[in-house]
Amino acid sequence: MKYLQFLAAHRRFLGFGFVLAFFSSFGQTFFISLFGDEIRGTFDLSHGDFGLVYSLATLASGLTIIWLGRKLDTVDLRRFSTVLCAGLVVACFAMGIAPGVAVLVVAIYLLRLTGQGLLSHTAMTSMARYFDDARGKAISIAGLGFPVGEAVLPIVAVIVMQRIGWRGTWLGIAAVLLVIAIPLVLWLLRGHGERHRAHLATGNAVSGGAGRQWTRAEVLRDPRFYLLLPGVMAPGFIVTGLFFHQVHLVDTKGWSLTWFAGCFAVFAVAQLPAGLLAGPLVDRLGATRLLPVYLLPLAASLVVLATGSHMLVAAAFMALAGVTSGLGGTVVGSMWAEVYGVRHLGAIRAMATAIMVFSTAGSPVTMGWLIDAGVSMDTIAWWCCGYAVAGAALAWVATRPRLP
Image 1 (cartoon, rainbow, N blue to C red):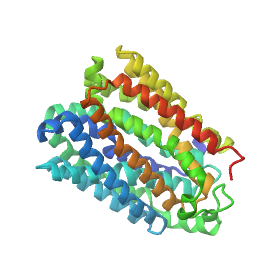
Image 2: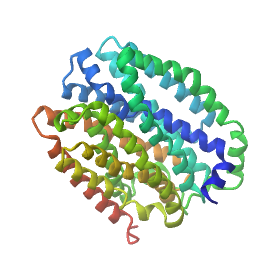
Image 3: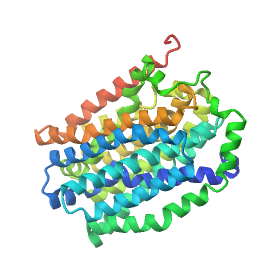
Image 4: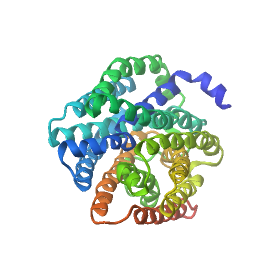
């Protein structure tokens, strides 16, 4: 089934996945880090201090996801999604009123938990669970919510922040989400009960490309899982760290923050064709074959970043990193179902999501300490490039047929 026909046949449910992916932007590093200078100034934090606060909150959210994410296997999707949207509203409101560092930590924790973690987890797990033969297409279409958010929200946030301040911006986001998010999600999920019953009746609950339906405990004993993890975690670790310290990055490169924020549109635009191409490729070739390849554009982007300071370097870095991001959403999202089945997909993806969140918790504080110690952003980019190449190599080993 071609993309347009597939979209027309499943437009409401695919729209649900897209909307959750878009709303997850408010908990993503690329968005929160836009307020980094203002937050550090308000609470008198150094780069390393703010990185530590951010990392602790992110780490706590990852631990929570391990428990909450598996509920997606048992709790009605409508109820689960409604609670997540309400939690995101609370997180944005807390960010806007935070009187001190303690409340700031709680606000970032809730943003990372609901936004980066559970909204993304719910969107991708739902697409993987309820589509079998067209899983790649479904994930790629729903995943377009990520680049659309990255293209639109940074420049809007910078403009709004210049007018009403960083606190007012977060309070405005909370108000908009309160009015829009929950009613829209419930409307898009109308008729989901029938879909779920049909899914169970046709046996899709025990399909997914894997003849064996792995439990989370069995996955943890599988050696392939640990070989796959570095490659799966690499984009989150690297991009989160660089985006979190984007204000310092643009200072060292001589760029303006407005220019770099505008380059997020390049990041987003690059994801669109990559994500749409990944869908049919995954459906035809399989996600495991593509997994070792998807990190190579990211490695190239880091070489570009480390070797130049021209304004166009920012755009080139964003474009190449965007290709990996566009490919990765579909490739990694499909890979878990392809390798381990869908019966326990919520629990398995929750664990994988939590581990990826842990990796994103480590990069802001690690890079913050390196910056405070005088390590240049170019050197950090070279080290990250080495990590991306190593992750691709390990993924290649993990997907070889000779492995058990």
